[in-house]
Length: 100
Image 1: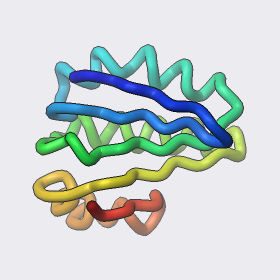
Image 2: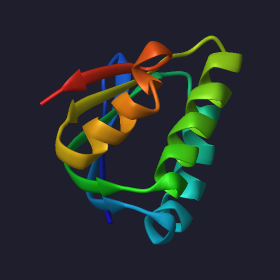
Image 3: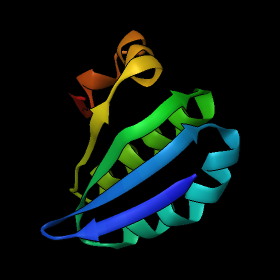
Image 4: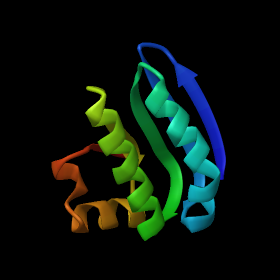
C-alpha cells in the first residue's frame, strides 16, 4: 500500500494496491490524522484493484468521523471489484463515489 497526499482546498489521498486488512493497519494512523485536519477528503482509488470488508470498514469509519466534524469524504476513480462491492453495499447512497 502506497499513500500519496496533496493539499489544496481539500486533501486528496491517492491509494495504491489493495485495500485489505493489512493495508488498513498501515492506513489507520493516517486516517486518524485526517480527522484532525480541517479539510474535506478525497480518496483517489484509481490504483486500488481490490477491497475487502476491512477496507469498507475503514472508509465508513473515516466517513463518519469526518461527517461528525462537518466535513465530507469522496471516493474518486473507483472501478472494478471495489466499485462493484461499493454498489452492492449501497455505499454511494451516503458517500460520493466517482467512477473511473
